Image 1 (tube, rainbow, N blue to C red):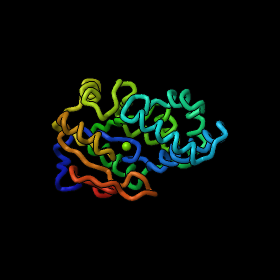
Image 2: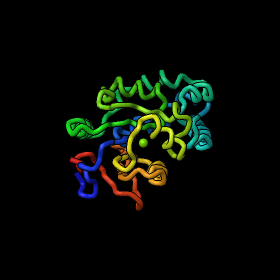
Image 3: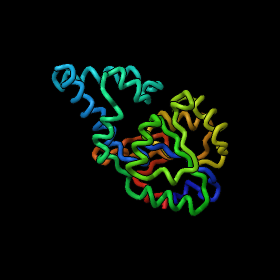
Image 4: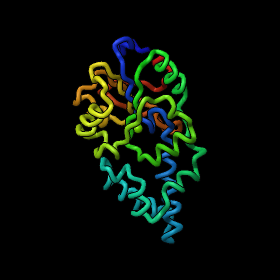
Length: 218
Ligand SMILES: [Mg+2]
């Protein structure tokens, strides 16, 4: 474990899913390639035009619950988003050393919670492919909470629901804005996961302690 993270004092491990535990390449490919491709076919426009149009649409829903709601996107884009995700399920991968880390935390009797902005249908597809669900004591989707993780209300409700003690919690996420809110709420130990996608450069932060690989925590 990193010396800045005192494992003995930590009772709760709070984890983000996409980019932190799972390879963000799946999501990047899905929204950046597969969806524009299918949208272009459907509306008989070029891939480039579809991409441009969709990126503007994505941007306008960032940090909202719509962003996390795949039923919203199915309706908005007239595409069957869950079915398309299934089509490329082979790209859903767990990052290296994540399973070993989860097993080790269970052995140390830590409570492990998944806190995700992903929709429960997406979580289901990803759990089916990776079998990672069995390591969590509970899973909380921001869609069920009513606020994305970037908002303090998410954390207030998550604390009430999961009954974690923020003074004795470690939270790991690959989105800086989410960590900022978690910090503001008072989660004691925070880590930024820099390598979100296996096929992109690691992300950078100046504000948080960083890991690239879960091996660094073992
Ligand atoms: Mg993430």
